[in-house]
Image (cartoon, rainbow, N blue to C red; front, side):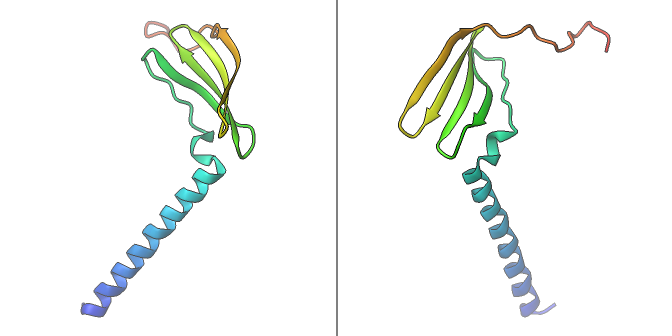
Length: 99
């Protein structure tokens, strides 16, 4: 292998990395990065679900302790739609339950 082969390899690698970065930026602009993600954690605060309403607004269901709050987030600010929502009982199997 000579120097031109190495330069061609590096150029191809840079091109592929640029394509991946471009796709990530487009996906973020279209809202695809969080559309399919549902975040659950064991802390006191969390995002239960997030749905884009349009290009500028997003509907978010927030969890705090045992209460949920429905909020619309936009560039102009946030609007609380409903507070004090009691989450439905968990349908997940308990560790001792049989599948």
